[in-house]
Length: 74
Length: 242
Image (cartoon, rainbow over all chains, first blue to last red; front, side, top):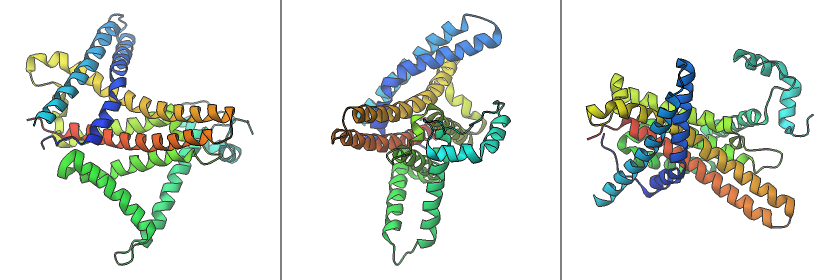
């Protein structure tokens, strides 16, 4: 199934979450790293996952903006 | 009866404390003298209310003479149906049962707090986390249903050499959805309630009504956004990238 065109309402809903996206992704990344550190007895995974979390936040943000600008062009 | 407890919660705690403790015991929580929390009881009330509405609505359905009650039900059905078609195309209505359920549950939970002596269960983080968890599990199950065992492969990104980097990033971003769904609903409802309370402490005259109106609006919008995001996530999980 191809991705259908997004309605204004759907964009509104998604954009309402953009402000949360970066801090939440970073926090989740750190939490995952912390949990893995405890599981494996290491201490560096939290830093790695913190970076991955912020990367995930940025990526989701950029991906959404790019997808929506493609929708606008088409 | 503790002062902070709702009257309906105190009924539960007075008469059903044993049942509450045995349920808590199943998940390893130590027994308490008053195990029922306000938000748990309010969720029961919301579910009871919705079940009663549908139990009353079901026998009254009529093609020839639809009443006002039926019209209201059809309005909500058409709304959810239309939204799911907008987001997911012709496959949307397949998943409508879940979208309708989560929408009505959150909407009722948000608005029940406006009735005196009740409070919104959604202004408690565990409740919104529960809704978010169910949504998270649901859209992943739907993704597995659509892609089979290849579903985790959709996390790997378009280029194979990027996959080791993309996989943890995708996992983090999916888990971030869980947290953002939780925080958005909880924070909005909690803040709305607090603003109304602050103005109620300042004056009883007219002003708090404005903020109660705002609270109703926020409650409606948040229920709508939660449902819409569930649709967007299901859409992402079942979509085949071209």
